[in-house]
Image 1 (cartoon, rainbow, N blue to C red):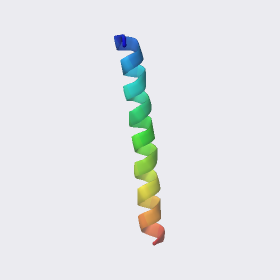
Image 2: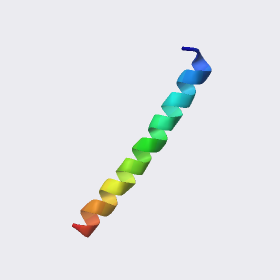
Image 3: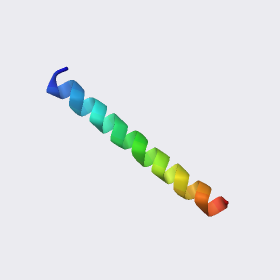
Image 4: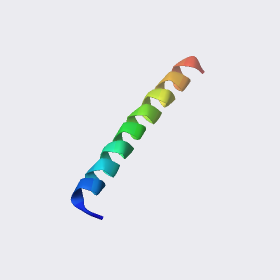
Length: 31
C-alpha cells in the first residue's frame, strides 16, 4: 500500500471517528 492510499484511509477513519464521537455526545445528551 503506497503512502497516498494510506493517507486517504487514515483521513477517512478520522472523519468516521469524528462522526461517531458527535453521535455519542448527542446520544448522551438525549439519554
